[in-house]
Length: 398
Image 1: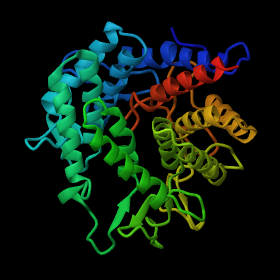
Image 2 (image 1 turned 180 degrees about the horizontal axis):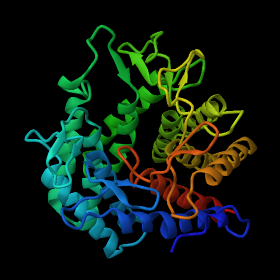
Image 3 (image 1 turned 90 degrees about the vertical axis):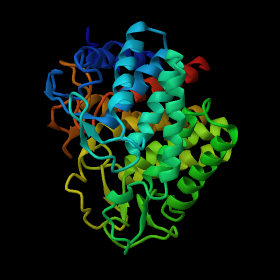
């Protein structure tokens, strides 16, 4: 049964209970009912508004994300056999079909598992490593534990040239991208019980330095998506690109690292950066967080720059809830309520469940799909889980 979304903001429900209900009674049932491929294994991610499959291609990073999600829930929430079986289907499919002979993961496969798009970057590998690590913990299968470690080590070998022979850049303007240190800062914590402590700390130190000292612009307080190899800025479309959602998501990774390392200064800097990015990226005319922006206010090259995307707002809710847990100030509370009100009044589908992913600037769905090539079973349930657990801790203190 789908949760009535009109109850999300009722004062009768505390935030923790509201997020828990949304996760367990709305979003997860949508994916459990509609996404499994009982014939070939793995998951369909191209689901329309009602959950009907409209394309059977399988995108490897979304397969990995869904394995991770159901394994994590099994490990952290409740050892439900249905969750373990869901994870097993995807983990087995990824292990059998997801990688080439060198252990590099493809971008997409046919329904049956035949490779469609080559392993042109390491981001499929990152989510495969996360998936295998969580599934190994859930299942007790040591083979997946080994796969997780080997995949992670392969990522590190490729991190200085993540696209390899598929890199489009000629080398004339060697820009490095924010996404890699950002994802490594979260990935290494996912694999902490598999890797050597020295390896974990080395990757944490690298990621925190890159995120907070290199890509975080000291004067503007914004995260740049691309920098020159020496860390300097370049006055070009790519060099001026700001992705508010990426910066905000990275900051809750930084807060988690700050908690792990008992580093209040890192938590404070991450909190300040969350607020700064929101102040910069909020659409004061129509509400919501803009997708792409130009650091100098020039027209961005992305035609979808003024769309409002599901994952951006969800990551902001996670980041703000974590920031509020450590710094319960009025400013953070006000921003949380602002983002919460916009998100819950625009993205959830009260009739069919789950969330719309793509809104136009005015806040109307530009696509009614629930899953596709980029949206799968990940950002919505992960954020609901994170907010549920964070507000449980907050509310236990009041």
